[in-house]
Length: 447
Image 1 (cartoon, helix red, strand yellow):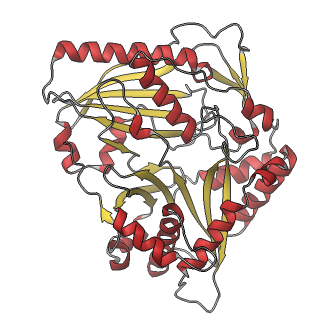
Image 2 (cartoon, one colour; image 1 turned 180 degrees about the horizontal axis):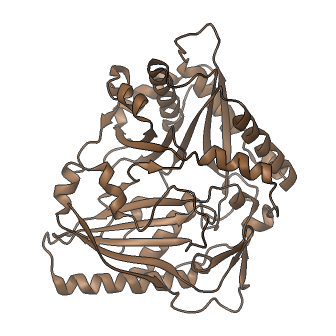
Image 3 (cartoon, helix red, strand yellow; image 1 turned 90 degrees about the horizontal axis):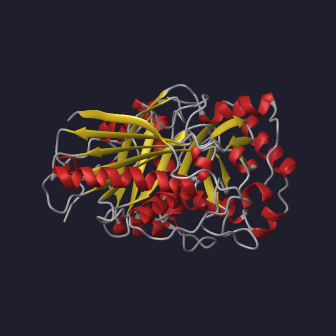
């Protein structure tokens, strides 16, 4: 298959930024603590008619573009540009909008999903370090020969987290359906977590080292069905954590098997595992924030697991790792968040990042869970997505051990999008203990 770009333009909001809003948007401290990169979301939609009607297609594409413009008028910071590290100028410059076509059919692609081809459905390079004055939102609409559509969206992580990105996509869909959209809460994030300007040079260096390592990571997709997750949860249960969640159990299992693969590949020397998970604080803050609160309302939960030097095979106790993860999540409660001021948050994160920068014996596993965020609810008027995907291979971002959880298309399973290096992947792909629960890149069924 080949993707051909038909048009590429900057779409301005349908109306100027309202006068009752300031002409600048202050980012929060938590925005500053997010990487300077685009987050990718790829949504596949089937054509119920299974054939391409050019007139209907033209109307659909025109309607999507018009509704995108109207949504930018609501999410006006996404139509602006960064003026400095703490300020977005709400100048209505607009978002990047690309239209394309692919010479194949959607059922054909989903029968054997080509993970490496997915980047062709994105409007720009995702998960790479961005330093230019870029649009905070970019989308690409790609049409298959059968009339199926792909909506590829990239949202700038310095402005929004995954939950806010999903809220934007759902708002765009509601506008397309002609429904009313509640304006997001644009003020709470910076009021609760004021930005720190400027950030120290040391912090920026530690931060960029943590996220951007300039290497290539190879992406793999695995599906864990409901039965596999039930077994993994049971295996991870203990007296202290009798009911581990799907995410806790799967995170521990994946870290355990990749630690084994890394040891077998002799690719790294390490004595400490560090697992990170961004945690949505909206419902952990007292009083809770609305789900449509704009920005990055997340904080990284850090879990550290020390490996005994005598443990040459680096075997990991699954239940112990889950217990440490649970403690990390539980530590982000309403009391600890209430006590978190800008200097304390900065110092805490700076200390962790500096330890990573100066200690080569830490192996990092970076997890993100984008399940239960409503991505499968994004309905532009022709039904919900048949599949929500992540992306293909990456260059220059979280070069090893990045994991994204997405809802599986059927049942209560989870998709694992795993980025690592070739040496470890080649061992993991043949690991019978891993493959007992993980199904490599299965087909997507379209009813």
